[in-house]
Length: 279
Ligand code: C2E
Ligand code: CA
Ligand code: CA
Ligand code: CA
Image 1 (cartoon, rainbow, N blue to C red):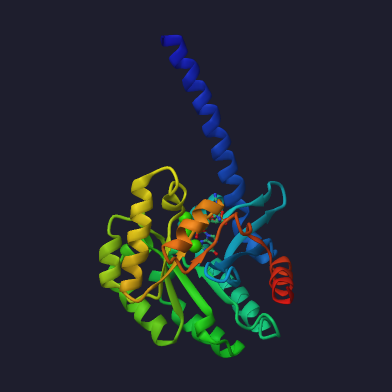
Image 2: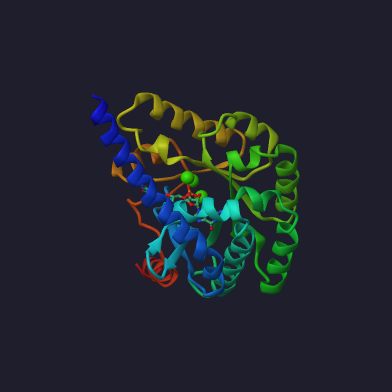
């Protein structure tokens, strides 16, 4: 038993070394990556369930790492948060999103809403509102077409500050959505504390709608609760027709997920919207 334990330990520590090595590779290049334009925004369509039409998209960061290839945000956002790079990176995302919204003032695209993720540090720093004001002003963007997604855990790090931020955002006409709704410890107090427009039901609940009766009940009740508070509902991570039918039957407003489309480059998303509007 002892020798097996040692074997396990060695295996585990080799794995850790790989993880540490990757982390170092990412960390070392992260700052340079912004300067060298290695980041890209992918877009995942958001579908209005009643009509089946694309009403907008969520912007999701991708990093084209010169050695590792395409790197997803789950691998570098936590590092960027720790190192502080998330602030300039978050500004870059907002700037890129504003450019996109400005370029969508074109026939067939002008109705599209763009949702952008905010990190905890961005929410609690002082630079966000002035930066947003400048961007909205420079690009002449309709603030109602910009939606900012804030996770429960980010907002709850400093509830008073978040509350004030959300009031400021909404006074500008910017939309606010709670991301990963239901995964925190205080989802209901969140609804009581914060002025918001929409909730995004976490994929963890959507995933088991068909197999777990409890999840089906929770999702249906969450939709009803949100609606009775005057909030819109987006379901995340919809992968099957059965999930889509269930959500539509329960009155869920919008959905996104691999069933409809994976996150994709901007040009591909625009082509998808254009071909839909011609159909
Ligand atoms: P999130 O905001 O919850 O984004 C949804 C994630 O679920 C995305 O992963 C998306 O690709 C994935 N997804 C969408 N539909 C499906 C589906 O049907 N099945 C499955 N299995 N997954 C689906 P992604 O792009 O890897 O992003 C991961 C997380 O990284 C995001 O989670 C968000 O928290 C963070 N992130 C992404 N972009 C940004 C950004 O610009 N700023 C900040 N602060 N965070 C970002
Ligand atoms: Ca999100
Ligand atoms: Ca989410
Ligand atoms: Ca998530």
